Image 1 (cartoon, helix red, strand yellow):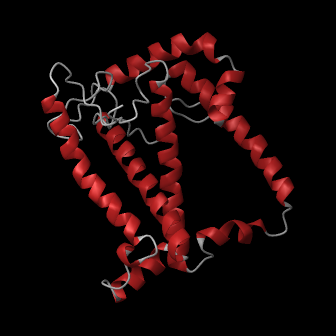
Image 2 (cartoon, rainbow, N blue to C red; image 1 turned 120 degrees about the vertical axis):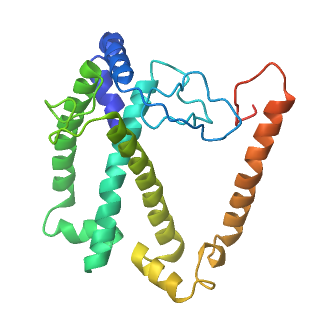
Length: 247
């Protein structure tokens, strides 16, 4: 949301065309064919043609159907993935070395700082960094920091590394979601939960928790849904596009 606000402030409409052209050149130069569709036997949406890193044709809500906003959604996924990678490493590190748990770390690190003062500093600093990032992205179509677009101090940018970054970012986002959900359900940290599960695998797991029934229902749905989608595509003639959301 902050990125969109900053983009609007610096004239999103006036530079959208230039940004789109730069992004297209970047994607053309780093075209990475995923090789496999996320659901074999179905066809991906036409706008997911494999040119973006980590593109496996997965977009059940059709959020990327608008070509003008698709590059910005890709950038948003990268940014959220990078934040999640830092978060998961930090959570596991503090848990492993005995520092305050992640839900306590903010209060512990606050120290003598006044919360209002800290928030004011953070708003100013993040507004500056986000404004610089979105302006650089809109100009170059690349992710970066302040004046470095793309940001690649070690010179490792390549099609393969871009795919790895996207995959690790997605994994980290799922991991962070799992850590937050685990605390909400059990009140334990990741390593505490792991130790409890290893000590009693049959008695301590997601199915014996307070959300066990919901998890069983979700697994049943996830198992049946692909079969329904494939059958629906085979039955309907003249519509080869995969539509996970029937309506």
